[in-house]
Amino acid sequence: MARALINVPARAKRGEVIAIKTLISHVMESGFRHTSDGVRVARDIITTFDCTYNGVEVFHADLYSAIAANPFITFHTVATESGTLVFKWTGDNGFSATESVTIQVE
Amino acid sequence: MTRSIARGLCAAAAVALILSCPIRSGDAGNIPLDQRRSSYELMSPPTRAMQDDDTANPGTLWVLDGEALWQRESGAAGQACAGCHGDAAQSMKGVAARYPAFDASSGRPIDLEQRIVDCRVERQRAPAPARESKELLALTAFVARQSRGMAIEDVAGKDERLRPFLESGRAAFEQRQGQLNLSCANCHDDNWGRSLAGNAVPQGHPTGYPIYRLEWQGMGSLQRRLRNCMIGMRAETYAYGSPEYVDLQLYLAWRARGMPVEAPGVRP
Image (cartoon, rainbow over all chains, first blue to last red; front, side, top):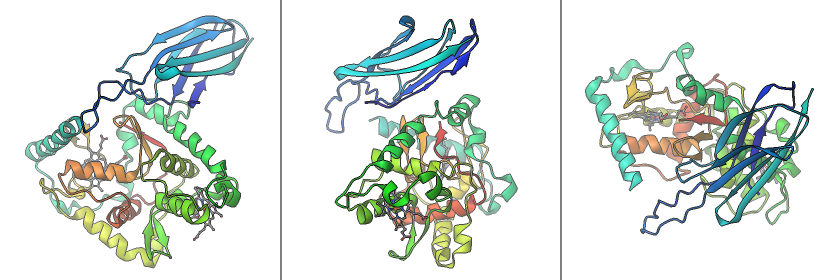
């Protein structure tokens, strides 16, 4: 499976705005490049990224060819309750990766 | 196609430098030790933040792959790197800070990549990983990471046997070459801090290698960086792994002696 790095604070105060950072290894081959003998290199990108917080979607992104390799996606959410954040990336050629982290809210 | 455009741009940039700011005289010589600066200091705050935060530094992806390879038994010997070297945090601490180092069996300096290839082939009895392969970059990044923050050693100063190779590296650094008739020193000793087509010319220290370069969208070795500079000078590049590169790397390490290892660095 693709390697991913997630940075979420382990604990937060209720109502606090927290920063979430994610980085995943992926070639993000645009589909617009050609090899030296003129053959088009097939597109191979991540197409969607999704984050749920205790089952509720808090962030969603659609990705396209212009995104660089190893996408780094960072966003904010409000720490509402203790629980689990699940991150899911899906893409071309059946690509799928999932990571989860827990957060303690007091 | 994209490659030839990039080459053209580099050349145009180098020409622009010659025309717009006459090169300071070539004998400006070495940079005083206390004026040395890593390219890190020339980078924008967001790029620096990316290097500093392990969870944002894409080089970490290679470091983690390297760690997995370190633990994996492989080759005809069925041995893992860890089987002989144990915990890398201890056994590999400071190693990257003293490479290139003298290798008795070949009678000359070898770089860290070659040292790892040698262990892969001779100790694990596995096929040699290619230069710039994901595997070799991952292992090198993992080994180099164990020396982060440590001062680059003056290996060439301490080891007599390295002296002739250091001198040949220095000569290569100072020699004008290529269609643009520039030397490495023209840019990195004499014109650092000035701008070249919008980029700052750095002093050219090897402190961050292997690096994650945003332009490459991937990891690359110091030799890949040197190859890029030589293409920019419109000079003939050497083959990966060739002794000419290692001599240059030895000179760069000597020139950066005492500066901290940043690997894996992030560069624009």
